[in-house]
Image (cartoon, rainbow, N blue to C red; front, side, top):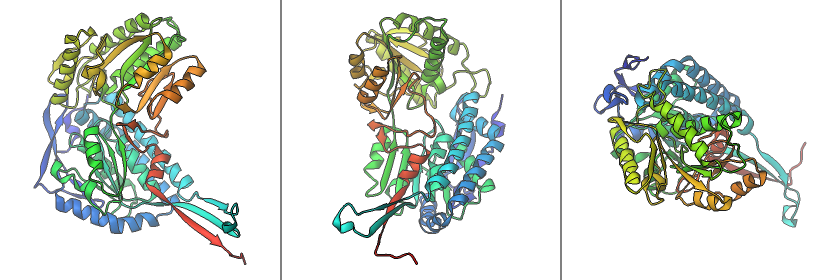
Length: 498
């Protein structure tokens, strides 16, 4: 079991690749299990943020653009090596400041390594990949040829959330390096140390040019510069819908990508086996449990609703209750290897979730298991059924360890029910019917449909993002690379090769 001794007492912000320990603005970081202060970070003031943007938009843009694809790829390979060498420290930092159980924290670091390696491939395969084609389909295009290539947009601004403080930062940083873009990053004020440790690894392992990156924890009132400053060419934000859509209105004419909230469902139809001894059935129950309660449900594609066909409803319900009880018998310190369910990010979140559970129960929902607060910010894994669609646990993004079960008998009807949300990130469907799989793909209103797995599934190289209030644009290494670059056209006319 790790202790807060793995943390330094003070972390400085990083401006143009260099660390600054300026103590005029200190921000406390809490151990999310004990709610006690374990470290402090130096917050950047407006002057520091302005300097970072100025250097990034001048020297940083010029030097990053000049890097050849093989150099960008090597930087990402070196970053992956740095993460691997520091996996234990990073995992313990995540467990302490994010409250993520240590096994899940290690998984996040491992995914971060893969993200960097995938970014290294993108750097070489796509940086100079262009198209060459004739334009002679029209008379005006006679003897004219066209070449297109992608070029970096310039300085990028990143705002990242608390729930995956390492890998969600790397989902922006890796394609930025692959594309040749400098960046300024504002990490969540709840989990800034992970990003600052990542910055230290970049300083030690990566031969990045001056001005290529800044990592700047800051006060809320100073964070507006990350979206409003005209020297920034694009904002990529991952976080709450409330903040994301507000930032969109302050961005002016710059590019923007938003990865926001979800209210994910999983549908299980009547072609799925309900034999509890069947290996596929067992795997499905394990995946439903993981997808619903991993990191106490604090992921934007966490399973929040499970739609069960009448023929399978009671069997799946019984198995999920059994698994949920196992989780509730292993609640505790996230740095302990045995812990399966840890704290929520703060007391306010726990109070909100508890009030939403109580609201549903008072509106005649059945509480099948869980529902209690263990301490100020731990809530048991909870399963509800017969939930009114007007209740918050059904209608809004709960971001907590709570799922609602609902019966269905008609497949097309349940697809329509699943669409009755303002969000549209990912939906899961368990079926053995190929026609139903493609019907769901065609008709579900979301950015991704996952067949025979949970909505929480994310392969780091896939295109990832939502529709409706779940966001704009796509992440995934190649797709973020495209977001961070622009196509430039070259027309060739009447040229002779000597």
